[in-house]
Image (cartoon, rainbow, N blue to C red; front, side):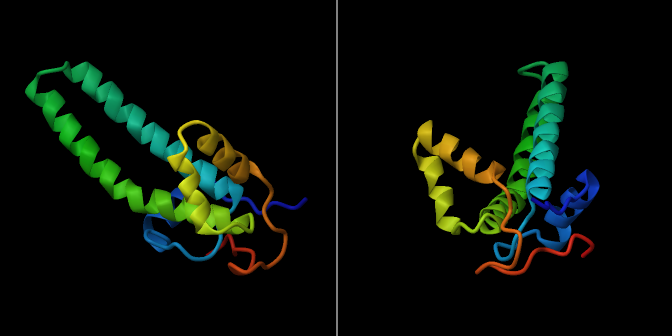
Length: 132
């Protein structure tokens, strides 16, 4: 089945600018997972910086504060791309509530997120134009 592809840089750019707080429309599988990778890398960078700074130091506290600010800044685009990815598979945003079930809910949601996109327009919109 045809999957429209988005590069790493395009996925990050779109999630942080064009679709920063957008919960409508669709996001491809590549767009979702590239943004997840970006968020993971950002978290790892702050973890390494905190480790280097050493717990209890002033620099460690600064790293932790900046980490919290960046994490809060990434929260809305992360939720937005998650909702749009669910839409791309033809599912409602309400499926995000699967996270409330500790283990099985996360597994169900991951299964939804790795599935193929709906190849044509669905109730959440047309297939996204990856050049926007």
